[in-house]
Amino acid sequence: MEARLRVLLSRGGELARMLRTSKLEEVAVDADRAAVRARANEPSERAWRELAAGRAKVVDHFERDGRCYLVLLPSNDAGCALSEREIAIVQRRLGGWRLKQIAEAIGVSISTTAKSLHRAISKLGLRNEAELIAVLGVGGRQ
Image (tube, rainbow, N blue to C red; front, side, top):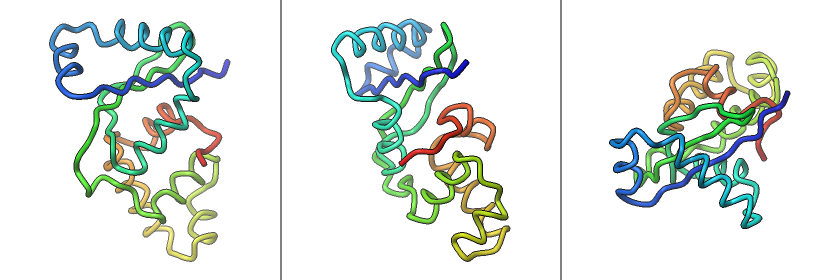
């Protein structure tokens, strides 16, 4: 079963308050239901754009009712934006490409590809490649 990605974007201290009250999952599910009712844009694409541009970081992700929820916190750190190379590597990796294939396609070594991938994972606020795939899913982002 393919889980649909849902996103909660928070502005300011509201998310910090929710984190302290341990109601984050319930708030994310409620926000998702409200977005569906409002016919909001596809959240996974919006999330990818915000993450790649460095305007957001992942603070939590979880699954509930067959859906993957992604909780983002706004980021003002200009160093969090992904480079063009990092975006290309992440997109290809999410598309199922092997590191060797990616390295050949962009004309760099496998070790440079691996380092760029792990730097991108860190900038996104994730811990490892498995978490990247779990959060953004296989199939790539445009």
